[in-house]
Length: 434
Ligand code: URA
Image (cartoon, rainbow, N blue to C red; front, side):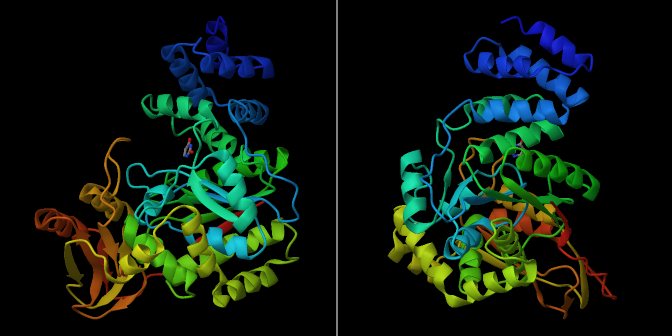
């Protein structure tokens, strides 16, 4: 294939034909387009953009570059949720079993963390023997039998996204709305979903810094998801402060179990219920949002999602006995309490600094090959707006070594700010795009 005219056309801001985009993806996957040409094409897209029909063609070509999940007909809608990522964002963990108990099938295909953004698979791998890589046949079987599964992408699903993302990652072309839309939606559309809820975050520790940018990304994904036959909505949420009171893989699993036990922090619980409520409405299982929220709240209180979680763990080979023992007693070797220097109100709990500290403690990845320490992180995090007494806990730090802990403590001083008057408490959920 002569790819040069296609690169030049996009460089000059022309619109590409469907066949040109389809042929480019197919040729790249056959190894007929060298990385340097594809990198130039991605950069042209970064500067010139793609319109909605080009984005749709690219998304579908990427989806069709590999296998898709095929489920038997069933009254239970197929649903999933995707978050653009943040610090302390563990919503997927309690959400999948909750949705299964509400009457959905949930083939939740998740990713790993990179940089300060945590990944659902990393969190789950802190559970003894839990297996995240399972075959497509097994995903379908598990979802049909118990209603949910949280696992990694299989090798044969959306290989074009893997190849293109690897190039984008090293060519400065990740932050392009059409490329992000195509990347996220190609993977979600390969699950053959009826409904999808997106949590699009903005703020200091998010991929998108501003409300405006996250709105644009959400609008583009919602429009394309709906056009492709998956009922799609987006919840826009802030990511300036970690979600919940923990950040770090194992600590986040523990907090997720608290949510499943009908406890846990209010902001996390609210977002889990909000995602479930929107899916209930999108899937036609509830007629309005207030009744959907009530249904999700009641279901969480019933204890059924906690039992479903255990069932999911067993299906994915986890050692439940070891897990339950670990829940009660396991901690990192070094724990330090970080206390407030004065009384007042917390005016900042900076998710970006906290995410960087945890990454550098070994809880996140500096490169794709980094080996994670699941135990490190923070819990008991004090959140913006909260009143604190002198000597009250700002957070507890979990580290592998004393020297790491000391370095982290110095950096964490800058993450928290305390003032005399209470700051305006901003809602975490800012907008619904549908
Ligand atoms: N997450 C993805 O899966 N793809 C992107 O391009 C960005 C975030």
